Every structure is written in C-alpha cells, then in structure tokens.
Length: 409
Image (cartoon, rainbow, N blue to C red; front, side, top):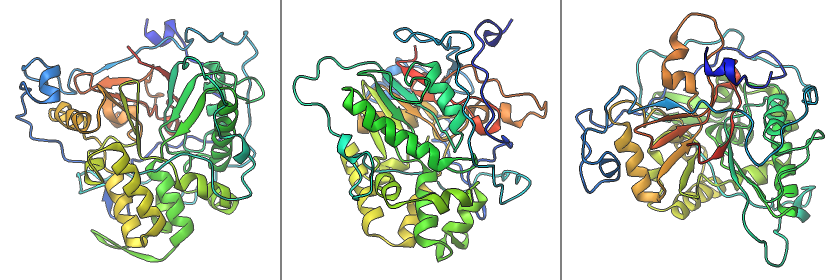
C-alpha cells in the first residue's frame, strides 16, 4: 500500500486538458544549469560541508532525496466536511496555440526564470489598492507559513488546494487569519486562466492584510516572459543561439492569447513589482532552482532591486538575458547539488532553499518513463542532502498543485 492509498489527496477538478509538460525552452533548446564539480566533498567551512559533517555530501544520486509523504490535512485548519469540497470551473477553454507538445531537447544547453517586489500596484484602477496596508496597532503573533507551487493558469485546482488547506472559504475568500502565504511564481501559461489566478492572488493579498496575515508572491520566469510578450511582442532580441522574440518564446512555452488580451494595467504594475527572492523563518524562497540569482547581487535586497531596475528601465535584450538566466534549472540535483544550494544559503541566509520551477517528476526522473500513469507526487520533494525542497508538483502534467505548510519535516 502506497502513501497515496493511505492518504489520498483531494480529487482535483479539471479545468482543461493537462498536456504532458515540456520543460521551459528558448527557441533553440532546453536550458539546464550545469552542476558543480562531481568530485565535491563536504568540508568544514562551507555550508553544505557543515551540514554533511565534513563527509561526502552526495551519498545518493539525488543527494539524499526523499519525498515528504504528507497527509493533506494540516494541523490548525479544519478540514471541509465530506462533499463540501468546492468545484470551480474556469470559463476560458485551453487555447493550445502550439498543438502537439514538443519533445524536450536531449542535451543540456547554456542558461535560464525571474521576479521583483510585492506591494500595492501604483495605478489608479487596482480594486484592492486600499486594502494592502497592515492593520494599525499591535499585530500580535504571526501565523503559520505556507508556500504554493507553480499554478500555470489552473485556477480550479488552485481553489481546491487552498480550500483543502483551510486558507480560503467555499466562496474563495481568505479564511486563514494571520497565516502567511507565499506563492513561488508561474501564475500563467499552459493552463486555461492565468489572469484569473493573478486576480485571485491579488484579492487574497488584500484580504489577508485586512485580517492581519499576508499573501505574497515571487515572480516566476513565466511572469517575466508574459510581461515581455506584452511589452516587446515580436521585437527581435539577441539570443545566445540567434535572433528570437518574447512573443515567440511565450507561445513556445504555453502562452495563452486570451490571458494576454485580458492583461490590464493593474496586473502589469503588480507583477512588475514582485520580488525575486525572500527569506521567511529560515527558508530561502526562490522560484527557480538555479544559482543565477548570484549574478544579480550578494543580498536579497540587491537581487530584488537589480531585477526591479531592469524591468523598469532596460530594453528587450536585457529583459531577454534576465529571462534566459532565470530559466536555468536543476542546480541542486545530482552530486553537486548540495554545494550549489549551500552557496545560495551562505550568501543570502537561511537553512533550506524552497523553490518551484522544475516539476518534481523531472527531478525524480519519473517524467521520462512511458507508463502513461499519473506522476507520483505525494507531497513536496526534499533533496540535495535536505538543503532543498521542490514545490512544483507538476499540475500541468496530471501531478498536483502543492500547497504546503513550512517547515515540511
């Protein structure tokens, strides 16, 4: 009997087809991050070495990986009564502009996803602008901390997962009091209602602040791609492999035309100010499993300011370069993974990296099997000698949209 037999997850509503998910690609191939040297051994004086006690920090192929086989009910939040699970149906059909899925490139290439600071949008037409500030007076103790993996436009599944954790009520409103929630990015593309997802997160940010909690978000590489498609369209950009455009790359990676048509000023303002990274309760929150953040600064504030400045002032080529860097992945997988995770932690703080971006079935290798069965994703995936937690449950490939309370162990 598997953990899923003992603790079955909620039956997810289907808001549209869930095609097999390709990894993000640029027009000329998939982008992986080369792992650090395979001969790395933990040693006193570096973070991963200290965690490994000076011993070999790569005692398994995935650096001591394991699933958190989580029981979906979470202490502190009552479960809905049987039969009360809300089912929400997205109004927009999936518009697959690309037809059949493209095969992922076989060989690793050069580089790759994105973000910047959350706060009230600066435009007048944001319906939630008046509710973003924390209540005055002593706020009291903080509530529990949750993270949400990649959503990719699957609004129905997001409603169900948040309701299952007691974070929203049956009508989709904040029900978690002083709880803290961080979305790890990638709201749009591939699924049927990316704008609906953004609207929900903005609404919950306002409602959570009014209740003394907060709901915040990181910008994923798909937000950077989405904004680039809106701002630069078919304008040529200089890719490392030739000339490309944001719109072409956006369509190649599951961009939905109806999302672009519904994008408004307050969405753009809000998305453009999301942070690239954050530190909460010793957890270094990132969208992408890459060390490219180190190329933008030596502190969290420096990285967030650099990305914010780039999105505010720079041109298409600079945007494209940032997208390319942040679409890199797999830095924490394999023999050099603990060293890569440790380098980020020693630079930015925290004791564990929590990220989205790379679907768990790809990290475990299960995505490469041809069984046709639903991927096995019982919960967050802990790996790199327990220095990293993956939260992209592969909702776009019939996995799960993960919402988990931290710490996960």
